[in-house]
Structure formats: structure tokens, C-alpha cells
Length: 261
Image 1: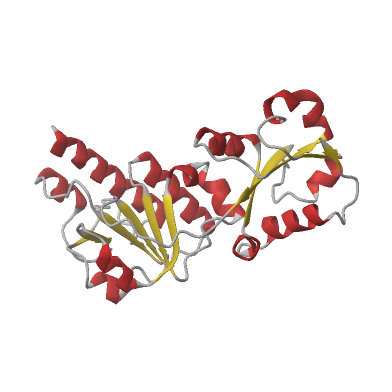
Image 2: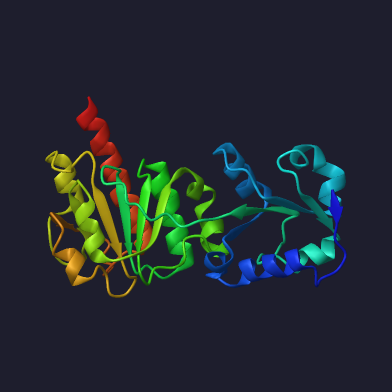
């Protein structure tokens, strides 16, 4: 255990950048996880932290849970830990992880494509739904919110650690996918529930979710086997992209179960 008392400690400066700058992890090759839920989710997926950072209160009350997960455990005053936090109610511990970009697309893996989805909360919620419904690869086009930023990590609730995540993709990369591509649309194409009832949803596919205002770009739309609408009898013009993703991915998961029986 190593105690830290200075706010100018190099490790703490690094963590503050990771917490406050959404793209800092790309420069540092490190990711900051705040809170025991995210940290336990990482451990459950076999991810070993580089460093554990804890408040003095957490060290005294729960050190048995964290002191042996890696070789470096740093303990600091509670008030100093608060300077690292992006939360209104700061947690009492966190992990620093090594990070390196994934660059190889898996062509046969059920995939979610994010086309310039910009809100970090939406991106994290989509990752959580993707993991829940068996989509183990997420391909983020350029312009999408940074997948490993602190806000996306919090919204993802641990989904990151069981998935293959690719960032900075270009539309032509999607030609490597050996599966049908489906895009969401507000105005054209068959309804999702009709495709499900007709057993026309493929067992393995790539769903594309588009920019919150502009939708899916025309280049990717041209690649799609289906442009799919979601019935909205209440009369709203469109759904939040994370809500639409949950509906589409659940429908595909249900279709995959039917195909397997």
C-alpha cells in the first residue's frame, strides 16, 4: 500500500485527465474506472487492473476486497479522491487499466454499428443493451462519442469488458462483415414487428444506429439489406437512439432463439 497526500502527485494528475477529457485514454493508453460496480465487472471478465486507488475510509473498511487484485494499491484522503471524480457523489475507489485500441473487425460476430452517435449516455446505454442481447462487437464510426470515456463507461455499467470494441471506423470497413446489415429509419422500410412475425429477421446481423439528429449516413444506408421502422402508435416522430437500439436488439435476440429451435 502506497499513501498519497499531494494533489500534484503525477498519478492523480493522470487520473484527473482521464476523468475530465473524453479522449485522454487514447493518449495515455490508460482507462480510469470509478466505483466498485465497474471495478467488479472488470474483474469478473478477467481484467486485471494496473493500479487500485482507494480512499482512506475504503482502505480501512474494505481493503480485504481489493488489496490483492494487483501489485500497486494507492490510498489517499477522501477529500483528495473527490478531486478525481466526475460524479456528484464520488465513489471511494477505482481502477487504472491498461488500454490499447482494437483494430481487427470480426466478420462473423453479431455487431452493433454506431454511426456518429454523439451523446455519451446514449452510447453507453447501447453498449449495455448490445451485451445483454448477445451482440459482442461494436464498431464506432468516426464522430461517435469516445467508447472508453468516463461517461460512456458509467452508462455502460460494465458491458465494455465482454465485448470487442472498435473505434474510428470508416463505412467501407463494414464490407468485411459476413452478415446482413440492418439500419433504423423513421420513414421507410418494413416494420420491425412485421419482419419478426414473418421470420425474416436474420439470426446473426449487424444493426446500424445513427446520429441523434441526422440518422444513418447515406453511404451506410446503401449497404443495408433492410431499412427498418419501429411502430410508434403514440404518434412521436422518432425514438431516442438508445431506446430504438434496445427494441431492435431484443427483436434480433428473440429471432435468434426462434431460429435455433
